[in-house]
Length: 396
Ligand code: HEM
Image (cartoon, rainbow, N blue to C red; front, side):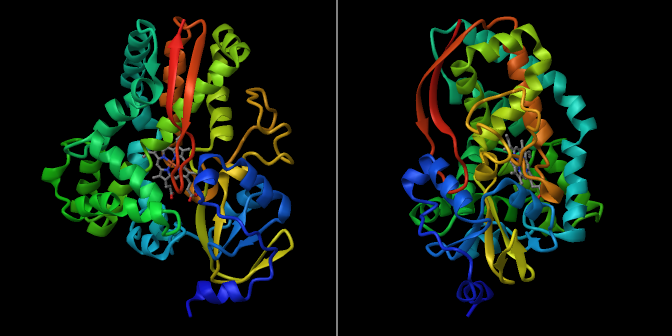
């Protein structure tokens, strides 16, 4: 019997018979999130043989306690992916994690971002100018994907490019859920990314790219080949879909709040708050799991050592006890800091890059777009990601 199965038998937390990965729940998780939050600080989900934590304070406390809630045994909801993902920063703890974060910072830290900012802003202006001339446009393809694909994918430097990165990334997020139909279908594509990194050589990455920098670090002996492969996955997997989903939601939410857009036009210094509040209500990553290194109580609910726990960022960000009127888009929230980019040592290494991209788009829109209209939102179904997979818009 595995530790996780033993933990299941020892479970005394309140149970909730809920399929967190059913099609309708993936399309809109808000009801499921509320049921989890309202039931108890931690609930046992028998269908997935894991606990779920959905209240803001408890999710944040878990993220800040990496010695109890460990990532080194994986952050997926299935054992296969937890084995396959070893070597990435996301799936590491302690000193190993610190050393990989240091390498990521060289590409994603403030100095590196300052360097690419002019390029991102110019590109954003070209996108907006082009879209202003159109009667209507496909938001995902023409607005949200342009910067991640046109700038970020190029910086990452995977030869053969952005299309491959997009396919790999969406499949990898599906594979981080339980081994359901969706995860099994995603497996061949997601394995393509692993295979790419296994055949990894400098000839397969663009010179002076982030991936090339990772190889250089390996050649200097700073990291092992296995760590280098993990770091390339760290750049490829989380950098596209997350930002694309957040940007699509940003346009949708602003089209529904013309008053907020008018405020931003009058005072563009509100742009950073508009971007942060959007990621709170959109939370592109629904949640990741951890494994408990020891017995632990979550606000009085006991959880046994060895159990798997899903930390629901999306549920925490809609917790009414932290965010009054949580579903309303309020860029003036006095206490608006959230966990959409995580928290603690594993907090998103690319958050400032994602913010830079979205802020650049809004800044480019301010002088040209008075009003925007959106229609036809289609909801994505993915084991880990949430948001709109389709949306049409018009700028006036
Ligand atoms: C709106 C866009 C984004 C969202 C919502 C997002 C969300 C997150 C979240 C919630 C985590 C925490 C995972 C955990 O605690 O287990 C995370 C980690 C991470 N993200 Fe992002 N992310 C975004 C964009 C990006 C971008 C553009 C990159 C660029 C490469 C990136 C790279 C990473 C990496 C490398 C980690 C792992 C950090 C670690 O384990 O120390 N993310 N992200």
